[in-house]
Image (cartoon, rainbow, N blue to C red; front, side, top):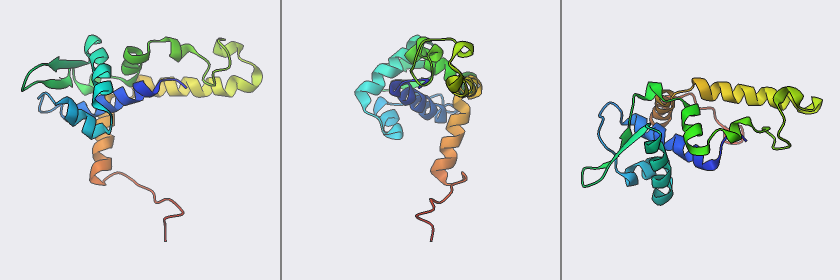
Length: 153
């Protein structure tokens, strides 16, 4: 696919930190882990990579933790993907069957190339602020939730 599981975890962590952006307070690693249902030690390693990329700030000590290094409206998902996975995965065939340019893909795989381009476009335009807002809607039940057909009765 376009990004790794570790990258997905980093995206979830950034969305969690974005929820705390208005306070600009540092959030303990265990709180970020709890809010994202992720393991703390691995999450800490991912957050350190985001610190190096300038998206997250960290502070050691009793009042320390992690917080976003800039406005979540200015953090795009593509920035997180590049910080965690680099750019190599972004340029690979979405189905993992070769290392060709999209225009050189076999005819039956060209629709996958279009899908890859759409995913990349979404990563370019979606921000951490939008993810935090969506997560808040989900937590409060204000989001549109469809009932699963087998559970509706």
